[in-house]
Length: 250
Image 1: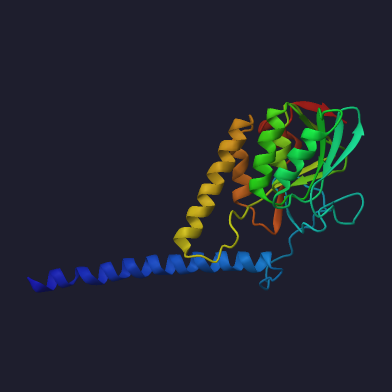
Image 2: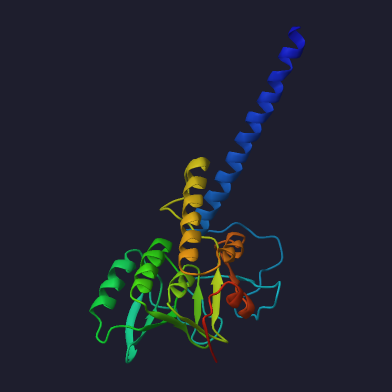
């Protein structure tokens, strides 16, 4: 009778070992992600990822992404290191640059004080702080402000959440909109269970936000499968399918 009972223990051991291996593997991936954020990288042995300057086609939409050189066309210099609000004409303003921490508070104050009151924001950004993008996006919607992207300009990473906030959204044919995975904490060097919980909570908040803005949350399937050092460039038909486009301009 003792032999069958004893045979159960190796199975339990294998299960625990499997869980440990999974957690260690996930933890390693998260650490590698932090290394990438710090400017470090692991050696690559596969084919080189196409550059952002190369045209995209259906099924070939992932491109190497460097937030300091995000523009596939036009000027090559970096965008401003934080969001800048600049008056254009009438109630139209340009909102351009990296979405830096605390930009939501700073930009909401600038929009509130602007004369004339902003009616439309022309966007160009390589992304940045997700939490600031969501907070600022909700303010943009509350103020019934439209968003716009002009020809040969970009909106990547967290920027599409600002684009989504527009009460109407105008996207030029040659504008470029792209999504990828985000980090939702100061550091991902945490025990795997806590890091995964943090990421899942953040993704859930993003999906709820997109639904709130009238965007199909299925767009996140492309973000979740694209690593942070790449960008998935949405095709025109995808921008329409996921309801980013409410108006069309050339």
